[in-house]
Amino acid sequence: MTTCGRSIAVRRLRLAPTGRALTRIALDVGRDQGDEPGVWAALTAGEARDLARLLLLHADLAERGAEPVGPGRGDTSAT
View 1 (cartoon, rainbow, N blue to C red):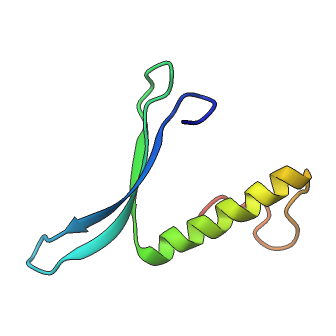
View 2 (cartoon, rainbow, N blue to C red; view 1 turned 60 degrees about the vertical axis):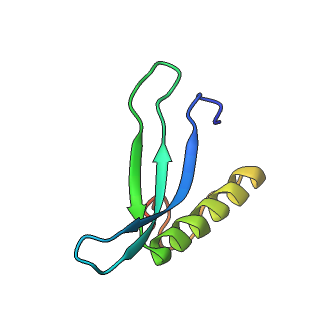
């Protein structure tokens, strides 16, 4: 549970739309304390790894009070 009251769930999602199974990582950010709707995304394994790297990078920067430097500064996308 986040400090704003949202729950974040990460799960493996298997889809078989045409007989060929696809696996995705589902990221589900639930409703907040005010019952505002959440969002979700289905990520490929590579996209999930990119997001994980960005989350870890920004968590480290936040703990140190540092700003990102160089290309990608302020970039919040995982791709």
